Amino acid sequence: MIQQKRYNNPIWSNPWRYRESFFIVAGLLLCGFALEWASGGTGVPEFTNLSLNIAAGLLVIFIFTAGIFFRKQVFILWLSGIHAAIGAVTGITFMALLMGLTMQHDGYASGWVVQLGLSHVTSSWPYLLILVYLLVVLGIAATKRIIPLSTKNVTYILNHLGLWIVIFSATFGATKVERLEMKVKEGEIEWQAFDKKNNVWVEMPVAIRLNDFVLEQYAPKLGIVDNIIGKILHENGKNVMLVDSVASGNMLGWDIRVLTYLDQSGKAGEAYYLNNETGAAPAVKAEAISENKSDTVVGWVSCGSFNHSYEALKINDQLSLIMFYPEPKKFLSKIDILTPEGETTAVELEVNKPAKVKGWEIYQVGYDDQLGRWSDTSVIEFVRDPWLPFVYTGIFMMIAGAITLFWSGRNNTPTDL
Image (tube, rainbow, N blue to C red; front, side, top):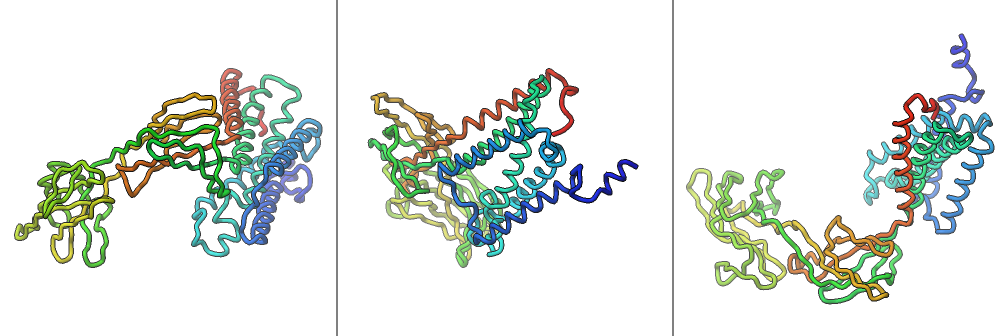
């Protein structure tokens, strides 16, 4: 009878439960979509450093004050409970679902999709409002456990406050990540990088000297192209053959066999010869035999380069054998990092293997695509995320909380949020 009476309580009468929680979340989302629509789908304006610090400071002060000094108030108790938590998590999950169902930053999205912020969910008003609500719920739940400070409360605080720090830092720090691009030529020193976001050149705290750029490539592949429509008939890779000195295979009813493979070549007359000059291109002398063995075609195929023209082997009026340009296997820059203090550090910079210096991470991101393996230019990216240490702090707190929970046992874990 008691349960029946609680369930039949009018909405917004104490104690608040899931109904009120979902109404609040729905209200926040509707307000967010309304703001997004009113702004023309431009999303949340970018914070300046000052406004970001003020907003973050006010949020922290509110959470700390509510969790410490008003933790016994009915509304604060509800905010720190499981009902509010489930509603907040449901709201953020709903926004994540919308993000997965719509193409993000799609220039061809429908007008209403853009105006509702569905094409840029993470920078939209509804996402911001529901995320701040989640931070408030999670933050108050963690801070109210500071008093009294017991073993089970320490475990609780480490896990929940650690998660709060990760979400808070990732949210407010995402807009403050700096990405600068630097192009360096072999034998030269560069100390300026370009900020595409603000369209300005920035002088870096270190200079980069490129000693050598190295690009390793996979062997090229052969394929079939339709001469009439100009379409490659690869059929999801079925009609593609990796080249080596003894490669053979069947493509669209034609038996293809490699007679000669030259990794680097130059053309003289009607044939190709081994050549290692700048711009030398791979070439293959191939044989194509029809399915009924009635037609045989022999000739050279090359993908070409910036210094040599490509060449295809015409099998018949409809089909031609072509060579795809070799895909990069590995590329790296042998650089020296020079500091104003006169220090020089030699580094081999590879993709996904950054170097770290003076608070910056230096990544290998590209090269001169037109020159390919003969590129004398390396494209390097400088990245700095001032909020990243706080994210790591939150992660380490959650790890410590998990260890503490393991040792203290599940019986010491509170049953609320």
